Amino acid sequence: MGSSQALFREGPVPVTSSAPVGMSARRTALIGGLMVATGPLSLTLYTPALPTIVADFATNDAAGKLSLTVYFAAFALAQLICGPLSDRFGRRGVGMAFFAIYVLGSLIAAIAPSLEVLFLGRFVQGFGVSAGVALSRAMVRDQFVGSQAIRILTMVNLILTVTPAVAPTLGSVILLFGSWHLMFVVMAGFGLAILALLGTSARETLPPENRQPINLRVILGNYRRLLMAPDFVFPALLLCLTFSGFHGFTALLPFILIDELGLTPFQFAMAMLVQTAAFILGNLVTGYLSTRIAGDRLVTIALVLLALSGLAFGILPRLYPLSILAIMAPVGIWMLGLAFISPSATTAAMAGFGAIAGAAGAMSGFFQVGGGFLGSLAAGTLFADARTALVLQLPFVAMLTIAVAMLDRWRKSRQ
Image 1: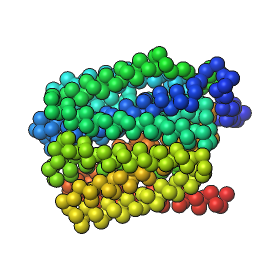
Image 2: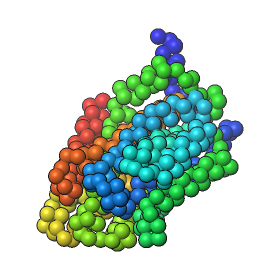
Image 3: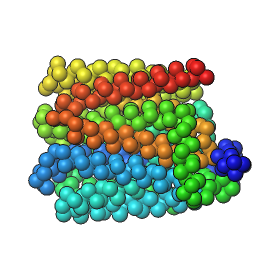
Image 4: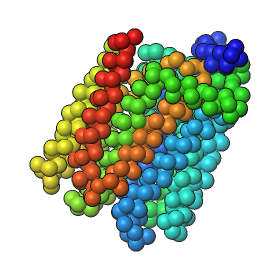
């Protein structure tokens, strides 16, 4: 019993000013942001080409959406491997290994002669890119806590917005001058750039004395500890649900805006700037407010925005079926809410688990990306068409998110 308690005892957070390892807040945010940005790059660069890929392989929309689902499944599951490995061997080396896997997956997809090979490439990509979410959070938790951690995660989110802002436009330009295969060459190049950054500019943030052994019993025990802790589970569920909504409409928008409303890939990219601008604005406001109000107040603002977005998703596309604004206005409001809730929920989920920050980052990432997997899977399989999925799924997810947050607050009030 004593050894079990020692195993799960919380250790002190390393102080960056005196520790021989670690990075400044700015460098941590920059490297973490670029690592995390690889995931959305692999999604948003690719989405303008989905209808083209469906046509090239003579398949249907469901098969095109399945390529997103395969990516999310590998992304979610691999986090559970990446986190414990980083707790044992450190963040930097594990990150380099996983991003090398991501580059391999990108090259497989780039030469894919069939839909099955494309699925394989996407799976390998998702496996490798899982390091971005898990390790960036662990790197922050290794060094920072509280409002400082929220501020740094907000900086990470700001960096994260740059790639999705450029990627759809870049993807559309690639389609004008070449085939969708070139998109995966670009992804491979981005992965190589991350490898170079980790190799030359990153420093290890996990001191040797804080490392955990690779032992299946220990790994499962750490994950069990997280899943049995309401202070972890409720914030992780909020991440799961909000990102489920985000990735749900991400999978649906190309088929609504391009196939139904007739936008060209470039026009689609321009419409998606509403999503990006809203997320940037939300992160700027969150960064300003994070040092002035508590994290739970930021979550309250997010819940109001998600409620408005869910209501708008349920009403506007029905009232104005030919309007792009009726689709993109709810998207923009959802992204504002996502910007408010993500840093606060992530910090809350990681707060009490500094001794197993890699496992906590991996499990919170599993919830987040698992939500993306479920959201894209439901959007592609449970409804007759993309518009029906949009007006039914997003309001339901919004209501469920609010219910989880209210249940968490009721739980805390009774403690």
